[in-house]
Amino acid sequence: MCRAVLESEEGQATAEGINDGIVYLMAIPYILVAGIGYFIYRKYNTLKK
Image (cartoon, rainbow, N blue to C red; front, top):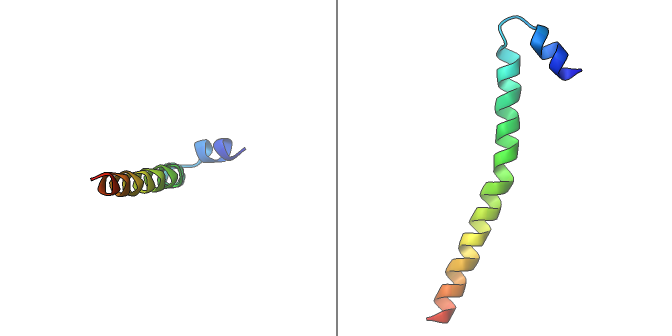
């Protein structure tokens, strides 16, 4: 239903905004997990030395 409304709209500005929002929401968990993994890796290496 959302797709049909967005495809029928003139200009496609709303569709681009929604796509950007989806990418933003999808990227945040990956960035958080990568950051936590980096800090764990760094802490593990400092304890090892």
